[in-house]
Amino acid sequence: MSKQEKNNQVAEEKKKRFFLKVGVWVFSVLILSFWLFTLVHSFNNTTISVGQTIDADTAAWQADLNQTIDIIRNEMVDKTSVASNTPAVSQDFLEKMNANLEEQVAASETAPIVEENITDKSRATITPEELISGLQKRLPELASSSCPEFIDCMPSIGEAKPCVIPPGCENITQIAY
Image (cartoon, rainbow, N blue to C red; front, side):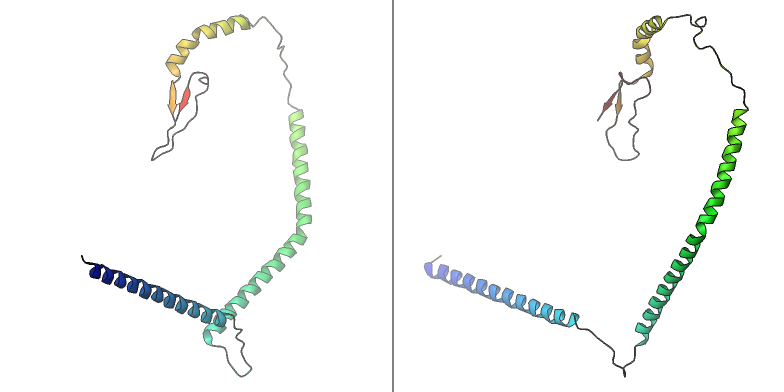
């Protein structure tokens, strides 16, 4: 390429960039002016003069709104009247509960009380130390037969997995993530 062609290409690039910048500015000014125009007119207060009439759509939703407000007011009045009657109802309920409680206590007091001699040593045939040593000897065989080595708690698609160590396997089973 010659110098002349390179200069022509550079000039065309500058021209394109200039037109692009002008286009962006014009478009931005148009958007801003449209926004300002709608902003000014969006805050105007429209009032109805005495001679003007309300159209049917406005009258319909206004009547619906008034009806809804009336329903809410009536429900609030009903709730306040119910609330004023509540203490008498509550007092009756509490008295019935108290009478029922007294009957329950009276019925439970008439049941015979059976006491056993808990300190009777004739029932114990093995000492606690012997019991613990026997369980420690059996622990490896019990652990290998009924307790899993680990529980897979890795999240996966589908049903959730329970990640609970079975009772008695707390020191044997591990949770794997």
